[in-house]
Amino acid sequence: MDDGAAAEFSDFAHSRWPRLVRLAYGITGDRGLAEDLAQTALANAYAAWSRVRRADDPDAYLRRIVLNAHRGGFRKRRVSEQLRDAPPDAAVPDPASLHGERAAVIAALLTLPRRQREVLVLRYWLDLTEAQVAATLGCSVGNVKSQASRALAKLRASAELADWGSR
Amino acid sequence: MSIDDEQDVRAWLGTALDDFAPGPVPLGVIVRKGKTAVIRRRLTVAYQLSLPPPAPVAPVHYRVTVNPPGPGAARGLIASGRVNGRRWQVSGQRQRLSGQPSICFQAPSGGTCNAGGPPRASRAGVPAYLTNGIGLRPVVSIGTVRDDVTYLQVTLSNGQRLTLHPVAIFGPGYARYVAFAVPASTTVTQISAYAGHAELAYTVPFTARGQVETVSWLRPGAPAGPRPARYLVGSGNADGQRWSEYAYTGPWGVCLVGAGSASMCSPTGIGQLTSGQAARLIMESSGPGGTNFALVAASAVVSHLVVSRADGSTARVPAVPVDGARFAAFTSPPGNKVTHWVAYSAAGRRLASGGVP
Image (cartoon, chains in turn cyan, blue):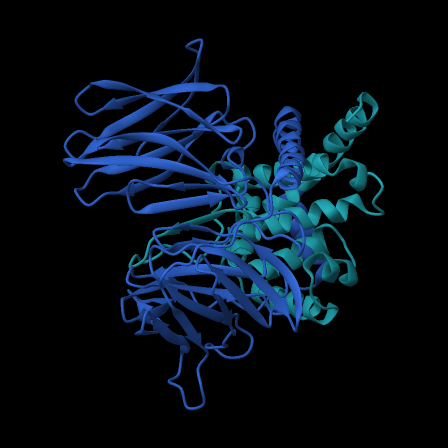
């Protein structure tokens, strides 16, 4: 990569980093993991920079890497005959980063299945269209609608949000 | 706080995420990781261009079969077959363990359970994920497939190819399961996922003690990545027995096989650390004599660890370079546990520290 491209990538990384980490944080509830996922996404973008810079929507590329890396990138598996502590995609909140209202929101988000969290964050925080969310997640628009609907129903009944609201 | 409509959700997520302040951009780490990926890709291409045609796989004397459940099969049956003539089968069902919902799998050689309900069907993520392994004679591997996967083809080190047909043991809406069994000495050389007759992706899994780990999936035809290599990360004596801890790099990424009961894989070595982190404890497992084995991942600037034990003694543990990262392994015996560790640079600068649970 020449100096011009390196400077261009540096600008790109600085401009995308905060939003990318927040996206990952909304999905994982873990600051360290969120920064790690964002780092992985940008490193991938660096490795394919000549292609990414010409892409119609480089942000979509980054989003997909974050989501895929969260789902399938890291594996930890104990050998057989051991009871697992948690299902493979369970997210653990970082207590140090949770305060008040944010804590309630993250706690409620983490009660949702991973796919519903992803749909909520992409649709209602990033304000992507249903078609964009479907393309990012590799599913149908109908699936996005149904996941969003189920997620909203669960949140309306969320004890975490109710507890916070009653304080 | 209440959620009545979509506007509430937007405000609610804004509360959680808009004000969340990430740390500074670790540009140096990002560029280093990116360069590693570029170099690895070039080396792979160069290596493959320089290779003579692959030699035929030496025949290995075992014979494996796998069959999907037939009509009238028992509820929950995922697959059955034979390994060297010996019959195996595996089934899964929902259970409650200690009041918690779980899914449990049972094979002739043992059983295993995962907390939580069965995973939902999904058209996103990796094509297949091997979630559990049971037993040693044979090793039964169980996994889920993505919704668009019609079947998996598993290639073994004896050249045999097994076709795995996913089964919806938990009904519609839930992920479908596959299973196969192999002798513990077998290596799975490739797993390919198909939609109809079109190959979606393939992976070169890592196999240790018969446990198969699928880490990175590649597009059909894409080069499989670096040549397999093994690094000795640590060794010693514990409970009267010699122990060794190895890191295996290859097309799968980096896999660390513990001297205890755990193994761990990730696409890159440095990926074990978060930005700005110099070192952290990534794996801890117990051996048969009660000794705990600990593994610390560290950045390239870490030279060694100093571990402190309950009796006040200390020991220096080298951090061994593997795939852009470093790893240090040490034991924590029950009679003299490690209380904490400190990571140092070659110049003696203290870079990170931590405890051992």
